[in-house]
Length: 172
Image 1 (cartoon, rainbow, N blue to C red):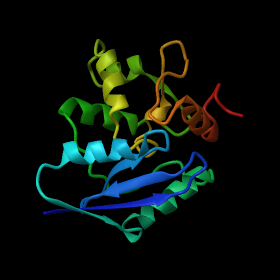
Image 2 (cartoon, helix red, strand yellow):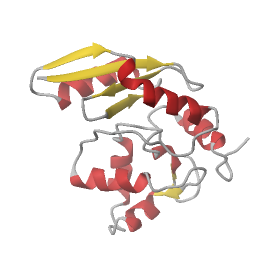
Image 3 (cartoon, rainbow, N blue to C red):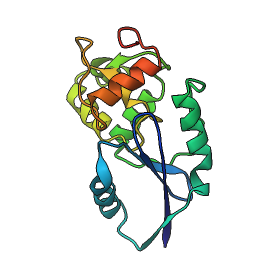
């Protein structure tokens, strides 16, 4: 039996829902995604019996780090994560974590960096399925032209996060 813990926190982009297993944070739900997204994800992810409980203490470290990030005091997260996906998705999400604070990369650059330069659309799909946005910084990925494209929490949230980080062309 798996125990899934969840809690909420208020942030400058709206309420966030954090979800974790015993191994670490496994999901962060942005305000634009809604509760239905979380429930659908839970139903798809776990086939065995699970217990879901609200537990603020389980996310204290994540809440503190997210608070520091939104205050402009933290540039890199140091949290235990329990991320699952296809080998390709995991490879993309690992590459996303290499993008420095305040910088952006294109989907093409991510595809090239993982050794699959023709997999631009697949990189976009993996980016879209990132279960822990902000912490795994998919907001730092932009279109080839430098334009903002797609974000689960909405483009205004993506713009806010890039502005918070002082990304060139997106600040202030």
